[in-house]
Amino acid sequence: MRYAFPEQVETARFTLRRARIADAEAIFAGYATDPAVTRFLGYVPPASPEQTRAFLAQVEADWEAGTRFASVILRRGEAQVLGMIEARVATGMVGYGYVLARAGWDRGCMSEVLRHHVDHALSRPGIWRAEALCDVENHASARVMEKAGMVREGVLRRRITLPALSPEPRDALIYARCV
Image 1 (cartoon, one colour):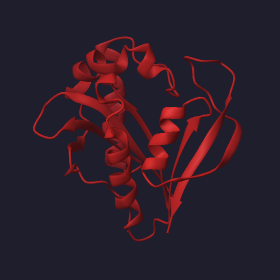
Image 2 (cartoon, rainbow, N blue to C red; image 1 turned 60 degrees about the horizontal axis):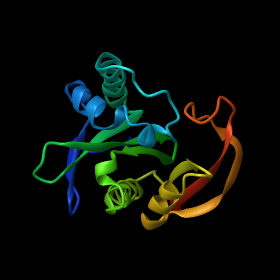
Image 3 (tube, rainbow, N blue to C red; image 1 turned 90 degrees about the vertical axis):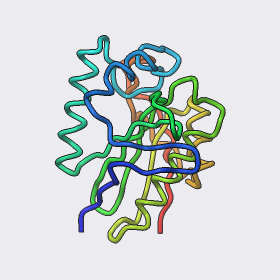
Image 4 (cartoon, one colour; image 1 turned 180 degrees about the horizontal axis):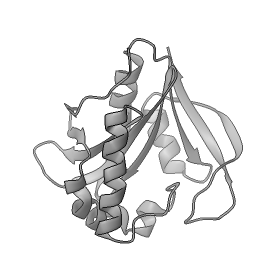
């Protein structure tokens, strides 16, 4: 049985819905151009709504292929895109990446969303591990993972490249939860 994330789910406070090309303008205007938000991204953020649409076209193709599942994050009952979380599937595990607009910071948003994702993945047959990485200086993201029930396993030396910080690979913290 292959892992898949539902096209839409609700947490206590948020709606997670499959990301679509139609979300490009909201993502671009909402957080993709904010250097504070994109500082720790592992890719160069889109420089235009057109580049955002191209990114989302790839996201849609990957969803169809069953290799990664990207969902936008909305407050329940609202249409404003607060961020995105992506589940990347590998044999026996799911890895996560996420981004959140400043409007969602310091409110427990991403911890709630990540916990839901991890709980979902680990409740599925054949998935034994959920993991995520963050830069050693990204204390907020480390706290998100801890609040989502993940445990810090260690430091991976020169593991991630963050274009906004350096062209050189940087050290990353690895967090996981296993069954």
